[in-house]
Length: 325
Length: 314
Image (cartoon, each protein chain N blue to C red):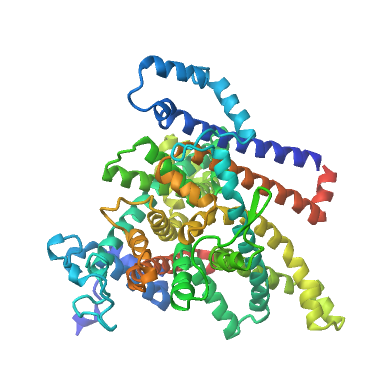
C-alpha cells in the first residue's frame, strides 16, 4: 500500500514538473519579457541591466529552479496587460470559479443519480427511452449553446433569472461568496445548470449502466428470494454498490468542471478564472496563462491522486492485494 | 432457346460493385437512422461546398447589402421578408447564406484538423506498438499526460501560444494555428487505438512471415500492419470530425478561433449573441441549430459505422 501511494506521488510530481517546464518555456521563449517591460526603444545598456536584475542571464537550470521556487509560493510576476500581480488577480477570481463548479457538481449529482436509477428500473419503458434520447442530445449540444439557449428562454423571454455577473457578494475575509445572498443565488443558477448538464448526462448514463449490471447479480436475486421489498432491494442493496464508480468518476469530473467553466464564464460574463484566462489568451498575456496552467494542473493532479487514494479506502479488495505483494 | 439457357459469365466485380454487394452497404440500407443522418450530412456538405451557387445571396458582397434590411426576422414572422428566409443580421446579411458560407469554414477546419491528427496519431501509434520498449513508453506517457487534461484547455493553450509567437498573424497563419491546436489535442485517441491493435497484429503469422523474407520494418508497418488497423481508425475519425467541428466553434465563440474576416458557425453565434437581449434570437439560434445538426448527424453516422465494422456485433 505504501509503495502504491509513493509511486502515485512520484508520478504526480513528474506531471507537475512537466507542466512547470512548459510554463517556464512559455515565459522564456514566447515574447521577450525585457522588451515587454522596457518598450521597443530602450538602449542596449538598459536591456542588459534589466536582464541582469531579473536574473535572465543565469544558466537554464538555475532559472528553472528559481521559477519553480517562485511558482510554489504562488509568485508568477506581473500581468502584461493589467500591470498587476498575477497572484492577486487569480486570488480575486478563484472563489467565483470554485463556487460555480461546486454548485454545478451538486446539481449534476442530485439530479443525475435519481434519473439514472429511474432509467435503470424502468428499462425498456417509453419514459426511460425518452430520457436516454434526451441525454444523447445533451452530449451533442456544445456547452456554450446550452448557455445561450438558457439565457434566451429564462432571461430574455421569461425574464425570470439574471444572465450575467455574480450579483451581490459578501466578503468573508479574502473569500467573496455569492451563495449567501438571494441575489447571488439567483445569479449562480443559470451558469451552474449550463455547466452541470454535460456531467449530469454522464452521471445518469453511468448510474443506469452500473445499476443494470448490479441488478443481474446473485446477491440481488437472493435478497429478492428473502422476500425483501422492492425499495429495500433497490436502494438498500443495489444503489449502494453502484456508487463506488460514480464517486470516482464524479471526483475526476470536478477538474473537468473547472476547465469547462472557461466557456460557461464567457457566456455568462461570470468573473472567474476562466474569463481571466480567455482574456489572457486573446491578448497573449503569458504570465497569466502560465499561472492558470500551473494552478489548473495542480488541481487536476491533486484530484486524481485523491481519487486514487479514496478508491483504495473504499474498495477492500485492493487493500488485500497490496498485502499479498 | 439454347442461347437463353447459357447464363452470361459475370464480369469480375470491381471495387464499387463489391462495396454495394458487401455487408457494410447492406447494414447501411437497413438502418433508417444511418440513412437519415447521411442525407442530412450530405445536404450540409453540399450547401457548404457549393455555397456560391446554392446560397440565395452573397453575404460578403458589400454592394448588395442594404442597411434597411438589417435585423429582419425570419420570413414567416411579422415583419419578415420572403427574400430572406431565415432573416438577416445586423449588417443586412442573409442568414441562410451566411450559414452556408460559415458551414464551409467549419467543415474545412474540422476535416483538416482530423486529417492532421489522424496522420500524427496513426504514425505514432504504429511506431509505439511495433517498436515497443522505450519509444512506446515515452509516447504513451505523453498520451497519459495529455489525456488527464480536457482537450479544450490544451487547444486554448496552443492557440494562445501561437498568438503570442506571431502577434501580427496573417489570416492564413491564424487558420494554421487553429488547425494545429485542434489536431494536437486529437492525435492521442488514434495513437492509443492504433497501438493496441498493432501490438496484436505484430505477433501474427503474416507479419512474422514478412519479417522472415526480409521485408524492412517500415514497409511491414505500412503495407501489412496499417491496412489491418484502419477499421477502428475510420470509426474514430468520423466521430472526431464532429468533436473537431464543435471544438472549432467553441474556440471561435470564445474569440480565439478563425479570423473574423472569414466567419465560421462559431463566429456567427458569437456575433449573434450580442443581439440576444434585444430579442433578435434568429441571428444566433440558426447557426447554433446548424452546428448541432452537423454534429448530431456525423455522430449518428459514426455510431452506425462502429456497429457495422465490428464483426463481433453482427
